Image (cartoon, rainbow, N blue to C red; front, side, top):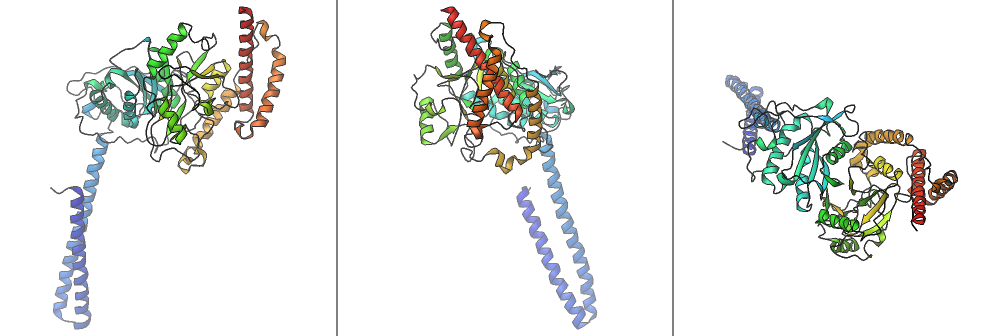
Length: 525
């Protein structure tokens, strides 16, 4: 049987041939009827009518063949997206499978009152790592991008917790794809735990869904059809913060790194970080041995083509222009960390991680969105903000600021965005025509952001002697913040009075932390 392209060419050639014959016979019959006026011309006219009928039949057959081929392609596409209740290969009624009751619970922040539900440990990792034995990389993806998590296994040496946002038509293809990854990708089944996130208004059919390990094995050498997502066409928001919170909540280790699947860490990040924490516990790092809350920031970079092997390689790429800090040309303030100009010149000891800089999230870094290693005790991400609306981590950063968290930037641990087509992105996001569709989501995020900031409490004065002059400090910090705004100019946040109030609250919290630290030092002396 001919393949589809050859069959289409054959039918096209046949239609052209018979069309040419009809035109030739039409011209001949018209010449005969109009000029010769013989009886034989009428016989030729009848033959032309029969020929025209046959050509119509050929055209109809070719269009029917086209429609039949199109239906076959649509059936093949639907076979990868059909719900589990309609496709036996991923349902609990398939051979060798058994039904299982999947428990869906509310999201970590909004709970049952929110519009999203989470199914924890749909595909749990075989190796369970708990406590301080490692650091869990917590990330999130949509159903059609699950394979991106496989690249993390080559660079991350600890467990991974992945939250996947899924639509009803994507559930079966996700289960098949996940079964293939757990069978064919080394380390995936051993170290990666997968959790499902969905909207209650578009809930998938979980009643007949089988665990991925019970599905029929697939040929690892044969690629699966590329999954197709309907989320963009339906203009559905991606609940990025729900997925972030779910992945972090499911982690079993004390320390977690909440990041994106496209951000690849430095090699042996987990082991090097735990060595640093061991030195802090032994009192060998007095700069980090403090009683106040702190998180450990990993600077984020983007590259032209290749990934750096270590910090020395990264420094060389930064000097040659092959790498820059992440979104330097798109959103300069988003990932510009304190001391970025000294990152390539400050000395470090290879293999021994130390603090590059220690700071608070304050002006001119009041819009900085760092990615850090922390614990599950840190504030959750606000689940009302979507990925399409941008700046989805700002409220969580504000909560860290108001709780007087210190930001410890590490010198040899970093994150690098996976190389993109075209290299380093240089088109600002707010002028990129490809981002125009996000305008409605950006406005919605801004409305949520304004309401969240308006409800933030003002830091209350403490009963300690160090805060007796709290009222005077408020007015002094207000003057300082006003001067900083006038000096920064373009750095002034776009949130208006809410952003200004936000900065003032963060400065007040930082002032309290510094003052209480000086008091504690005097009392200890």
